[in-house]
Image 1 (cartoon, each protein chain N blue to C red):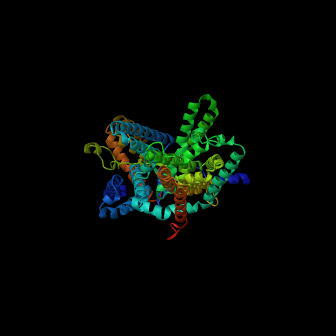
Image 2 (cartoon, helix red, strand yellow; image 1 turned 90 degrees about the vertical axis):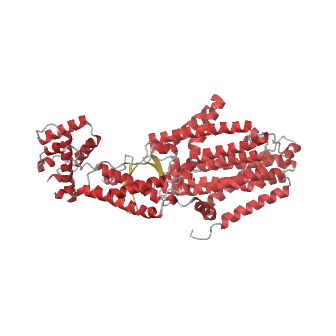
Image 3 (cartoon, each protein chain N blue to C red; image 1 turned 45 degrees about the horizontal axis):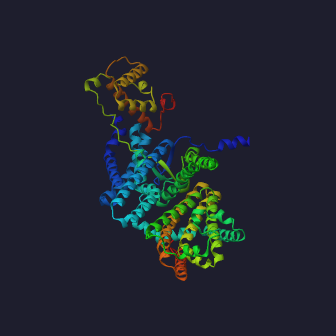
Length: 330
Length: 300
């Protein structure tokens, strides 16, 4: 009979290929691609294209719903397996440090300037507010955070808070809790950028104000310089990281509010992915800051040494973000 | 006039969860977005796993710290702090950055994350979509806990936090693509992961040969009675292979065709399926697709 052409032969001829592709995909999902043999790796794209073309033919010529559905599901699975293949981990890590991170930070430079300016300005404003009216102090710093370091504290208490050796030997616990807490704050600042960046701005102003108010308490006792050194040994890293996180948040907020020529969705997705790269870096920076704050600050008690470490870190970060990843295609 | 024209030109928006992805080879693939219910279920499973891991690990670390030497207690505290931080922020990231692009909850409910543009799902996209959980889940939770601790004095903040949380939690219901805030930022969406097995070839007759012999060949008029839609319903019935269904369908088809033979339902349906499919597929080769029995186009 002539009618027996049709999909029966079509299916019988190709069924083996489909089963093989299915088997390879099962293996690929369970194991690493490196475990597949060379022959399998060569076959995978060929089988994928054969299945895809079989799908096109089946859609046009076959009325077997189960066959078309099967080919559709298999092609989709193979598509995601093949086109979502990623580079090995170590290569991604290398690319992140050599190009990805510094480039992403440079891409958000305008927001970074804005975030830094906000932090500094709010600190200066808070300082002047508290100097003129000490009642402002409690509005900006909660009693738990101040822990006795308020406007009425004696010079001795304040000096003690800067230079006294830590209570217990638990420096590593201290450093770890600083790291996790700060990272959480940075992640929140980043995530809040989604709401047009406004909460992020509020958060950075609040952080700046806290630092400013702190200075207002210390400066009258002649401890301004000491507080500066106490803050800056880790602050250049930590405040830098917070500013970068806030900038990444604002970057998203700006993309959502002013997408330019792209669609709003495309702009948001672009900014979000860039922001995520920046955030990995921020978490790493905060890890460094936590170590500096938890160990170095408690072990180094000299103002100029503290300042030197802080300045060195600042120079290091600035150089890295300015010149890192300049070579190669942008 | 002008108004009506503009209305007509507006593209129709799909109301279903079916989306199309065109591969670089130029073949459109149909994707189905994960439903809101499946997404919520997957999250719930993941949340339960996270809480279980947290409790289990805390108990383990606590028992080790109590049993171990005194000086090591602070070391356990460090491990716990770091573990909590990693669990909270990177549970979703690590699983979704894997080959299956799905957390255990998503895997159980047959979902996976893919890039909306059909390209590769990058690590930064996975990170972006999951860092946003911080304001979607954890911040409202803290607000609520805070509100409970403070009592009625902060009913205002509690209401605000609850409203905010509700907006973000139900955001997927307010857009056609079921996007979370995190999906918006990362350019991703969540689709159903379908694994199907290839069904039996129904053109191969399974009924007894003596039964097959009793079915007289079908005339052209008999084969024009139905279209592709009915053929595929018949396919479903044959695959299910339920005696009562076979009897009901065979009776209905016989009545429509005006055939008298009784019995041999399976043989009859198989023969009719094969004949109808050959008939319709041959027409398909000539560019005539008869969609269903009401379709006059393919009839001639």
